[in-house]
Image (tube, rainbow, N blue to C red; front, side, top):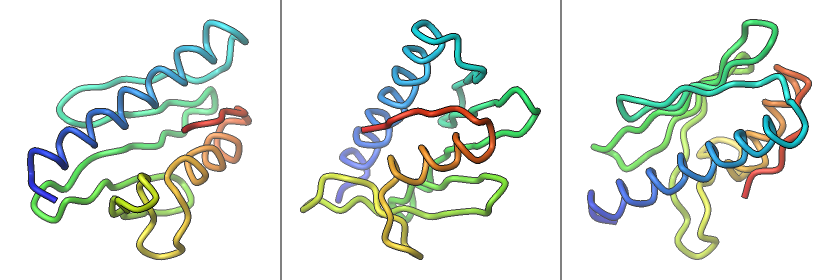
Length: 110
């Protein structure tokens, strides 16, 4: 994957996550917030915990830091998803679990 392709996929992923969180806030008054900037997205939960998504352009990876640990994701072109390099789970599945575990928020990411 070229750096341009990586950056496009990364930005699209962050936009999708932001949209899901915004919809949850507007539709159900979910107790979650987000802040984006500097190529990073921070999800903040009512209990003060956070999950941070950032990129590592040099190795074309998306990184996710949460209370449960740090996770690295490669983009799987066959599945069209970011996949964790350690456990093989997709980013949407892991992010949904993290939101539930850290903030008690039920979100479905795509």
